[in-house]
Image 1 (cartoon, rainbow, N blue to C red):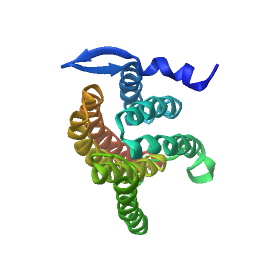
Image 2: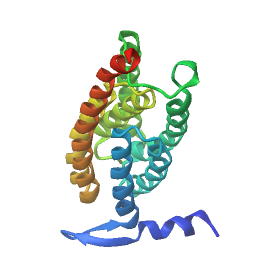
Image 3: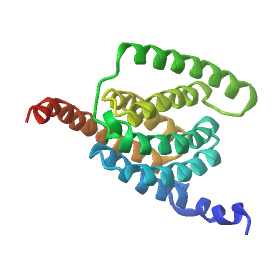
Length: 213
């Protein structure tokens, strides 16, 4: 059986809202995405395998909507998901579980530089070789998402601020593209990101107490 035969049913309409059909891939992406972020907030290792399944589903949704950079980004997310899975298990001192830390100045420098370069390059590519209606915003959210995912892989507290910025852009962008359910999902993501920021901050503040004990 061809891959398209397997994935095709996921793009079939599950229901319609305001005359716009919502596919099964978007419905399942909604559910698995919310679960993934909730698990990240709790620092549960299961967020990684569920997250990989989520990005595959959302990749189909974005490809069908013409958000090409977001669709390609999901492939990178699969690789980052495997990297993050390993990092959370063995990336700490002495190959122990990783703890929450802050982003250092040097790390910020190369992250921001890479983000600006990626945004400029992707904007040019999308504007020149695709029919994307929102090349800059598609590129910017792609670059910010990669920066945030790297930070999440390394349990950097500031990764939540990057995710919050991404969500604030994504919500109106997906509504503009008619992806209402995905836009609603990112409203939930935004709330979960704020909760994650607070939870990870508490966890980091408690670390010296735990060491002293």
